[in-house]
Length: 156
Image 1 (cartoon, rainbow, N blue to C red):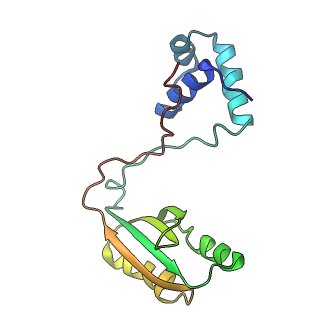
Image 2: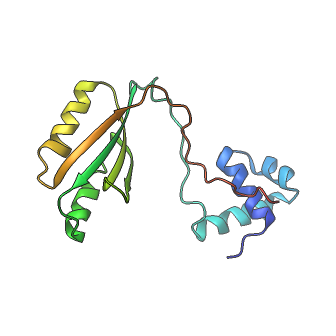
């Protein structure tokens, strides 16, 4: 599927508000509602849109501490990595990246307390013989949090 300027504009708008009414999207991109609906369906079918979600306020849900964790592992055989990736997919882990550099994984966690973080550390890191070391950074302020893909439709 080749994306045109209309598709890119729709992706940018949907990234800002995936619940925007079709009529509003159609008016903004200057297409019919039916055309916008067909384009969005095609974007889903071709994997450009992989899901829709609500963005929640972690503070209101008592997930007040954001922690970044770098993890270095002992073994990087594919089966060992797959096991780690599965163990790094728990609810408190908001994001997990397999990375290059000194560490092998970078995790972003949301937790209600340092006590809960200690419990997670025990399970994921202290009791995991494949974890060589881990380093944590506690976030003081969430300056920007986004899953937006940059530059979508900016040339249209």
